[in-house]
Amino acid sequence: MDEYYMRFALEEALKAFDKKEVPIGAVIVRDNKIVSAAHNLRETLKDATAHAELIAIKEACEALGGWRLTNSTLYATIEPCPMCAGAILQSRIQRVVIGSMDPKAGACGSIVNLLNMNEFNHQVEITTGVLEEECADIMRRFFKELRKKA
Image (tube, helix red, strand yellow):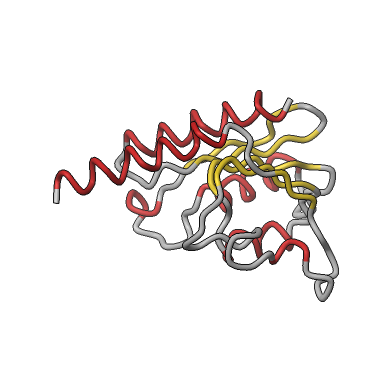
């Protein structure tokens, strides 16, 4: 089932790629239904906080009528950053499924694991490596094209 939903997150990442945004997609699922889907829009919106995960969380809260996203799973093509990990904790998401890890900015195990610190009042189950090659490949292609243009 994880691969099924990660494919939707990859579709979102492709939308970002087409908009010349860093190609990261996120999908939030509850009760086997997609509640929200989003992709990075930092360049488009000129907003440092317009990460796929934050947009998906905001849309899920609106769709479900509350800020608590308990019993929900967030699928992210790339490991969430510290800002997004904080929002995941605050929204009480139960589980995060990650495509590819991010050794330069990841906050779910690569640099730090904010989602499993006992000092916080909420911890999150993490699954990694779902469609890892596909998720990493879209990032490689994006940055390769960016370097070509530079």
